[in-house]
Amino acid sequence: SKGSTFTHSELAEIDKKHYLHPTTPPKAHYLSGPPTIFSEGRGVYLKDLQGKERIDGVSMLWNVNLGYGNEELAEAAKQQMLKLSYSSSFSGQSNEPAILLAQKVASMAPRDLNVCFFTSGGSESNDTAFKLARFYWKVKGKPERTKIISLDQSFHGVTVGATSATGIEGFQKFTTSNAPNFLKAAAHAVEAELGDKTDPNYTRSIRGTIEAEGADTIAAVIIEPIQGAGGVRFPPKGYIEAVRKLCDEHGILMIADEVICGFGRTGKMFGVDHWNVVPDFLCVAKGISSGYAHLGAVIMREHVREAFVQSDEMMFHGFTYSGHPVACAVGLKTIEMIDRDNIVENSRMRGEELLRGLQYLEKNHKHVTKVRGLGLLAGIELFRDPESGIPFAPSEHAAAQYTDICMELGLQLRYFDWKGTNTVALAPPLIITSEQVEEIISRMDKALKRFEEQI
Ligand code: PLP
Image (cartoon, rainbow, N blue to C red):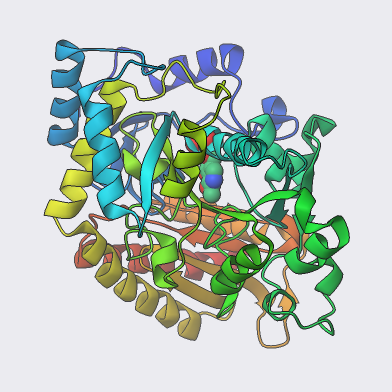
């Protein structure tokens, strides 16, 4: 252990006084114990200042895809910092890592998704896509196309645009600061999207929403190929293709939010690759730099870029850190490693093993149900009685209890309990080995036994 100059309790005390954390729970000051203070990471393993070791079963926030402590990524950052630590990428200025990363991403993204706009993360990518979609229509002489349709239970981030598109109510209603012209549609209403007017979800489907609002007011539809924070929710068969077709029918731009799915998480390079769908914008972050740098991108099709570069109007949009050379150097190295080390194939194969392990848990533990997974993105749900569909009462906080036990047994997972559900998410680093997958299942197994005793 490399240790620390401070003890856990010293840091916890300072943390409590001076540090406001993301998603601070109600009355946190009184109710929560001291935070876990992570101190070291190596591969899929994490250590904290109290000396506990854990397997990271969720790549922290679904982002540390190549695991912790990677020398090559550290070296790429260091070399770039020493060579050129920062450069602007505003009109007429550029730098080598950003240029080469844009080229590399283009070579991996489907079909003519060949152009990158760089950001520092997922929220910025989605906000950028919304603005660019609207700018696209302005350039095309249809400035009235401004509305963005997104899905219930979606998560697109926390900047104002991304918050407004997010369908998880808690985020969306926070301080009621939503931007105008964001519409919510029922998620995954595949029959309705295919045109079935008898579907009870029809009026709230994307199709029903477009018809009610008028297609010529809609700029774009945004979907996550697989909903992450909404509870690892997979689309029904034919859904992603149906959304693409619907957008084509009405000339609406399609945005795929691949902040989680992108760069191998689901066992293919991109989520949409499972359905051979090509969106107009594909938003990425997280896996593009494996969490080693703040980096995101909006990957767009050539027809979108053409509209912008031929426009008479200035595109007033860009961040200080758009195309940050150090972040881009880390991104470039990340993608080089994904390619070289067959990371996507590992995600696919270890994902199959993980899914089999979760199915074993479902068979052997009475509260486990709704097991699903694709590549290394998986989820289970906890029910009081799965067979008769009786959920745990919200007051039992079943998923929270279970993930707490997992933590104690050395496994970091995440839970989602929106709307009375109890979903546990798994998304381990894509470098994971078969033995480590087995270790995750074995720790989950032990944790379930303890959970069954205490619930
Ligand atoms: N989109 C999706 C699908 C996400 O899961 C997230 C974060 O979890 C975001 C967007 C927001 O990304 P960031 O936190 O980097 O702004």
